[in-house]
Image (cartoon, rainbow, N blue to C red; front, side, top):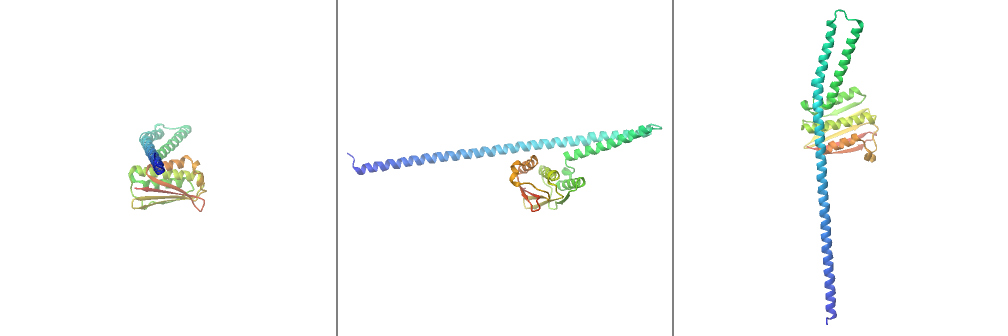
Length: 260
């Protein structure tokens, strides 16, 4: 018959074994959960990268189509309108004594054609930034700011002295981002002045966009419009970061950082 000491040893050994089994079970469960979480995180990263790739492909396809339509507008429709204007101008010389009505019709037709040619150029320019591919982002932004200033009461202080030529896709993305920011300022901010500052340090390109408008509530960014979402998507597409900060003058400051 086992002694009381043997019974205590058996109880202690059994209890210890149960704790060991429970510890092993807890270890395996914890390890399994960590593996599941890690796999889930990897899947989310893959999904996010896939979505980013899809967005990039969509942007590339859209820009390619814009480029094609812009060139078609400029090369074909623009050329056809210019030829039509020349032909209308020749009506002055094909009639010996044009009547007042005919003269008015010719003048009105030439004015309409001139206006259409100007609109075609403007649409073509909006679809494919003027001079971006040939002369780079610095030149294209200067042209954009001049056009915005000429069409509005906005004063734009553009500092691009530190900006060098970048990869074509990056330059186009940055142009579209700043174009969207300017559109937001014109539509919503009621601003009179905008600062756009580029600074480069080693492999980091920083862009500061600041206006003196009425700003918006940073806490309500969840309700932000499509324009800001487009900006964030484009910044993510070029592996950058964007932050919005209200300024003392009730305007908004946007900082964009891109690792080159």
